[in-house]
Length: 322
Image (tube, rainbow, N blue to C red; front, side, top):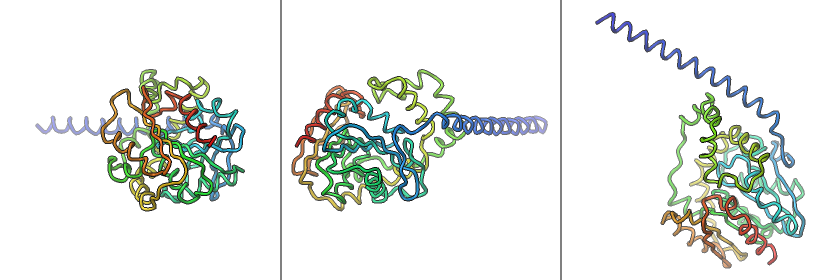
């Protein structure tokens, strides 16, 4: 019995040592890969100092109205994400796609991701980079909160808002699942396990499914998106942003007053499988404007602009012309 116990003990010890060695090797592999990725991961737009740190914005187009894009939570590279819209918008309007801290080409900051800090950073970036109102704000998913907050704080700069399957403040405050931090995810990222998984074509394909396989994105930009996803996976800013989403929604909700300018709500139909709660809160989102409009976009998932870029561009331009 004692011999068996000793053998078991040795097996456990050796097993633990093997796990530690593998995790250490994985961590070294992850750090080496990050350094290598950063060599080719250069800004698509320009970096500007905001509160002493680098914040990125990509601009283009021409016209009197500037469309300002706010990406959804966890969208690693906003420049790539909104790229199907650029050629459709450029002849008619200017546009600016910003990266919040922790996203795209922006730095990761030590500042907490409360909604007013995020909004002030966006305002400073637009001013510093030379953008001029009137702005037409376009938000995807959780980007709705900072977009509405911006309109609350700087109403004279805003001409209208387009939501691309953006959640209402009521939804994020009352109805969405309470976000939690995942220690396991962090461990898998830091030890290179996620990176190894993303060497598989099937894993990559599955990860892109919600974005229509990036059908309207060029191969070069797909490579950028892949690199960004591995570099930005659940960093401290992205995690804090999600953890504060309910509190941030409450701040926006407490200041609710219907906007005098138009609000267009584009809602995905999720190929006929939309959840009842989401459908209900999307319809109620109209209460945020005196000039609301909702469109249920057929045959789409959450990233509507990756499925129906023509329709999204048309609705943006419709408000820009008003």
